[in-house]
Length: 244
Ligand code: HXC
Image (cartoon, rainbow, N blue to C red):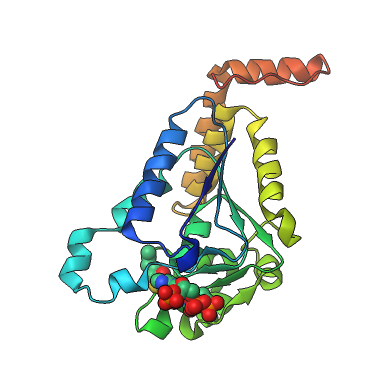
C-alpha cells in the first residue's frame, strides 16, 4: 500500500501543471512497483483539492491551452492499473472533484464538499465533470451541480452514489488506508483485471462488457493466484497471493 499526499496547502491543493505532472510520475512509478498493491491519494483535512489552478489558467489563450495539453496527464493517470482510493476531506472542487472520480473508490470525511464550480468562472468542467459525474450521480444532480456550481455535502454525495463511505474527519485517511489494505490482501493480478473490467462498463455496450469480463475471468485461470486462492479455500486457510 502506498500513500500520495497532494501538498500545496496554502492554495488548497490547487492542481497546477507541476503538481499534476508530479502526481502522474508518482502514480506511474507506484504502478510499476511490485511491492505496491493499492494506492491512497489524499489532500489534507481542509482540502483534497480546490480545482485546477485558476491563477495559472486565467491569462491563457485557447491555443496556449491546446499546446499545454494538460489532459494528456489525466489520460496517463486514467491508465494506472492498480486501484486508487481517494481519501477526501474538505474541498473537492472542479478538477479536484474530477480527480476523485478518476480514482476507483472514495472515502470521505463528514466535512467533505464536492462541486463543479467552473460555471462561476465562465467555463465548464474539462476533466470528466460532465461525464463521470453524470454517470455517478445521474442527470438531475449532475446538471444542478454543473449549471449552478453548488457544492454538495458528503451526505448528499453518499446518497447519490458518488462516494463509498463517510467517516469521522479525524479518520478519513486511516479509513482509506484500511480499505486499501483490504484490497491489497487480494490477488494483485485479479484486482487489476477486476478494475479494468468494472471501468469497461463505462465505455462499452453490455454485450461488449460481458465479453471483456469473461475473457479476464478465463485469463485468471492462468495465474498461480487462482490456484492458490481456490486451494486455500479448500484447505480452510488464508491465501498467500503473489501477483502471478
Ligand atoms: C488557485 C486557489 C484555488 C484555485 C483556492 N485558491 N482555490 N488558487 N486556484 N482553484 C487559493 C486562494 O486564492 C487563496 O489564496 C487560498 O487558496 C485560500 O483560498 P480562500 O478562497 O481564501 O479560502 P476560502 O475562503 O476558505 O474558500 C475556499 C474555496 C475558494 C470555496 C474553495 O477558494 C474557491 O472557491 N476556490 C476556487 C474553486 C474553483 O472554482 N475550482 C474550480 C477551478 S477550475 P490567496 O493567496 O489568494 O489568499 C477547474 C477546471 C478543471 O478546476 C479543469 C481540469 C483540470
